[in-house]
Length: 466
Image 1 (cartoon, rainbow, N blue to C red):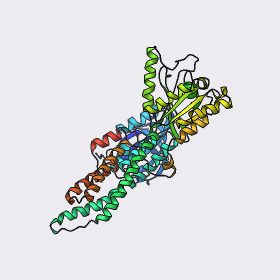
Image 2 (image 1 turned 45 degrees about the vertical axis):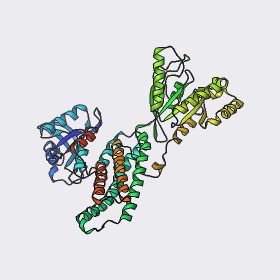
Image 3 (image 1 turned 90 degrees about the vertical axis):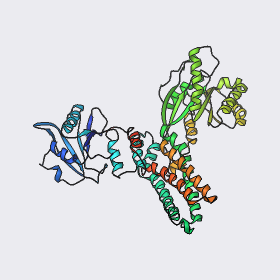
Image 4 (image 1 turned 180 degrees about the vertical axis):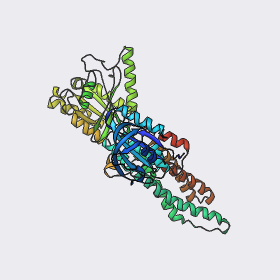
């Protein structure tokens, strides 16, 4: 797939701005750049050192297009591993287009999505998991997802996988060596040490696989469904959480006919709040569809906020407790917070009574007033407590990529087979097959094993210019 032709793309977001950066990479990148650049000090870019900046103008024959600053990065000491220049020009869309069109006429071609990073991978500047982390870093929109992407881009995940693969590869070599001396019945691979290695690999793989449950929701945002009867204040609570009038608030029951979603970052973690249609018996066809969607959203959510009107709850508590138990039984693995809204309308005695009534349900209970913004911060802290960020604080590797997760599962399956074969004295040639399969799945993560279709799928999701 590696092609050394010169590629060009806008490296900054499209549209007008203060400046724009146009990136060129390839064997002839500096030559092409030099052909359109006129230095204010008459410098020839071909004679300049790597990692230097040069002021001048981009010139199309006798026409000056812009005053620019050109950065030179000579391969292999560049992001792509190739000769690269970056032209910092003024951010006019007209100027951007004129410079890119000029470079295309001079021999560049437009870069494909993610082609700069693809070249970095193919030239050995990044492994595949690090390259994928580049895309995650660009799309990170909260502290936690940024921290995970940075750790993976620095090689935290790939280093861990590479170390396990190397140790397993050493034993695989010894097993293969035994096959060459099969007639002499000798063992080069210490079975006790091999068993210890397999146990260690199994432990690490399970930890990484388990981390995906946390990593996936951190990367994509933790969905939280706000459910309850009509007119209990779900939309008001959503507005209070977001600190804006996102949802329509009305005294008319059943105002929310569809689900409304919005995102909020709490303590560096992204949460996606889903305001659902009120749960109640209704003959309104449109509203009933909304209620059906509510249960679908509960199914998709990681956390459920079950909201109640305080005045109704104190007179219908027995009925509501049954409803809470129904939802809890239907979704036993989902954390639920029972939120009693309109706290300002309850006395201290009534609050204590409700607390005692719900004590046996073993659920999180919060009293608040969405309208007066009382208790909203307590609710945010409660939501944050559901997220296991211990791994983040300890700087442990967290898996966020579905492709990595799939390869880890397959590698674990093969390691389990190898372990079983070792414990049952399976012949070395059969064990070697399972070891090779495990090594294959390790290699798929870091890119030591790859194919054009896989790379095409991965880098197609990148933005142009990266």
